[in-house]
Length: 229
Image (cartoon, rainbow, N blue to C red; front, side, top):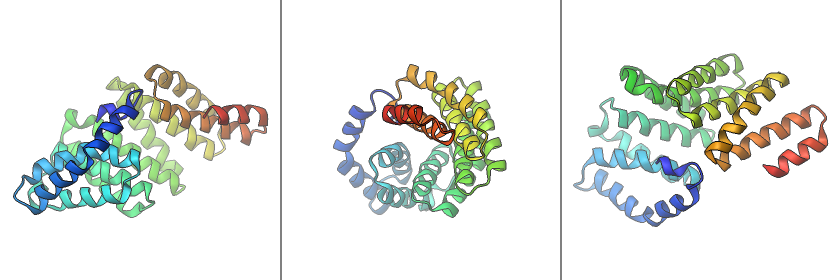
């Protein structure tokens, strides 16, 4: 799963794509055959990022719903928590916001019960809820979510998580018209992503800075930044 972000993303997506039919068969066996439903849950959890990256949103949601709904997979484990995060993210990308919130909040509850071992999951749930609230215009709730997630990622020394939350804070502040704050957050995110060689998120930061420049009437700067994005 960790290989599906960063500089090796493309080659690993191809490897996952080569195994997609095998994964489909294994998931079907785990749920509808005589396989192990818990193994199916673990498999769907790890494949969630592939479904997102390659646009298999509906299929990913269907597969995750099947394993999450199975009676043998109801225990509040870390694996269930991360499968809920993946399902919530796919629902968000299809603008299914009620489901997004329900799944993210269930995941948050699981990770909170796990204590220290659940910190990364808590941060990811805060991120999802913050992004949802941003889309709904609930900025006063969204921004503290991103700030809490940022603090956790900093404590975990998770540079990608830190960069992501700086990006989210930049977009949220820009939508509120707080352009100086937005520029500070986006500018802090860029060097981290350059170190991580994460071209996908770097493109998003450049896009954000381009929109910010456009809002401030800096058309030439905006054109340059958007072309780089």
